[in-house]
Length: 164
Image (tube, rainbow, N blue to C red; front, side):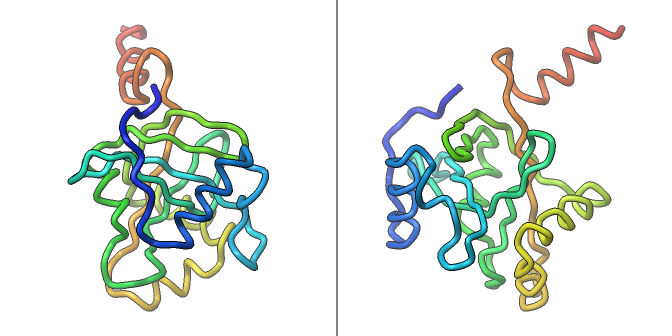
């Protein structure tokens, strides 16, 4: 289910401009990070304080239809603002090129996080430097497609119930 509400563009100029270019071109322009040429996706969240729709370009880390959202904030001491938004409401949208889909985010830990961290570093090597320059542990979310019947958690519960 798409997120409804008023879109509030980022106060950060490069974020606002990249999101605008990405979306206005259907994902054919603005789909790479500045001068690196590495692919990005657009993550749409609901602002925890404002309730407004917020959008941020993130590095594209995809595996079998699921994505990682790495809350690196460039290695700065605090989590990015979008981290709090996703923690408060895990129902998000993701645009990868021309494809938009509803997703459910869950923060991961342990072996699952280690596996996704390796994928993230393979997609964007500076993540290693970002972790080294901060004392905080950089959080990682896995974004999974939300089925029409509900969230990934609801699908899992339905599958367990059906198996009984």
